[in-house]
Image (cartoon, rainbow, N blue to C red; front, side, top):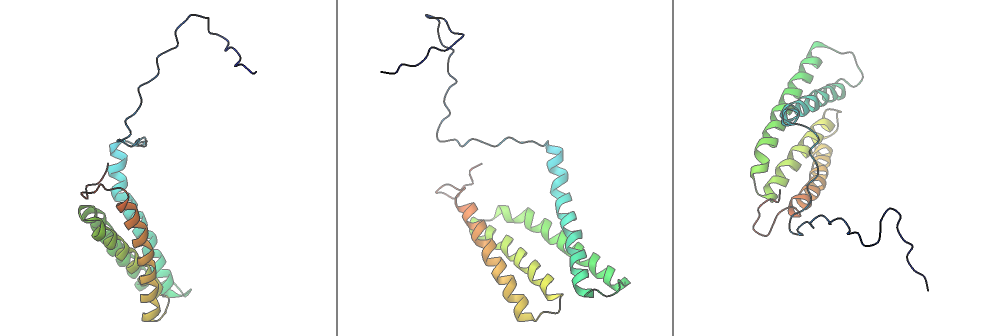
Length: 160
């Protein structure tokens, strides 16, 4: 019959250290926050601005189709970037205040419209651009709805 080997460093008759208290099963374990409040505040505006600049450049590049860069092309890129930044900030500000269905629809509609617009700048037909935008929006809606549905209680309150 096998027996457990004695552990080194412990004398017979000494007490074991107390175990830490168990966590309640009703409260999920939160992930640690690695960044300060200031970093989060800056990132709230910096991320949409960077995404908007990349989006504007991409739309302008699609529109010129490898041709020369013109002043109108640069203007189009900056106007597209500003529109994207404003809409992205609006969606990020107002969508979390909505119920999970509308929250998901708002974010997925923004993403689908953005992809459809990019695709339309490459001289694709309106129907193909719309179809691609709808497919992207449907996929993103499924992902976001599942995420928000699994993180709310029965009354619709978000679990934080």
